[in-house]
Image (cartoon, rainbow, N blue to C red; front, top):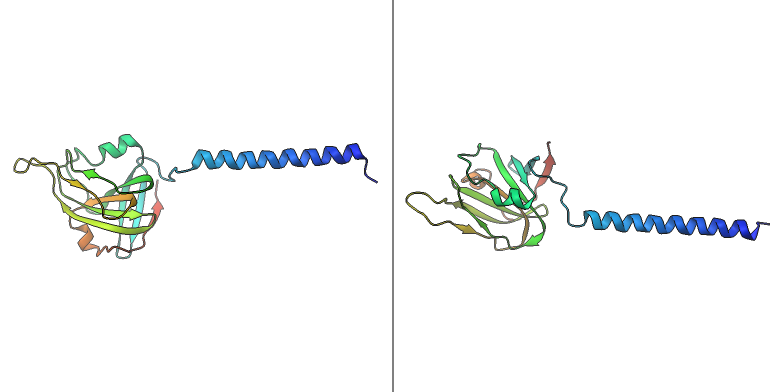
Length: 165
């Protein structure tokens, strides 16, 4: 027969262990809720049905604000992937851009909208273009103008992300 005192200690031990595990689960959930697996400046391959774009990640507010502004050009198969905590109607602008862009609007891993050949402000056209998707998105891939057409990217395409560094 088990001693009542020993039995109570064993039950108490298991209860404390269960409470600690539940606390740990809540801690991890609150710590990582809404956070992305992607970090600023990581390089991610974004695989579409007809090609791959190597994209630099913009996850922090500062990196998102800077984006591709002030860059002279972007290599053909490169881009910038902007990550947001939740799906929303996003608003981007072409401030301090030096070349036109295509925008691929993504929710999780599905293309939800496309914006093509968005012009940049120049000496002939001083206005800063703003661009938004028709559907909510939690990621935006900026690529060189014409690449959506070249890679035949379509709304509804399922894409994969592979972190390189």
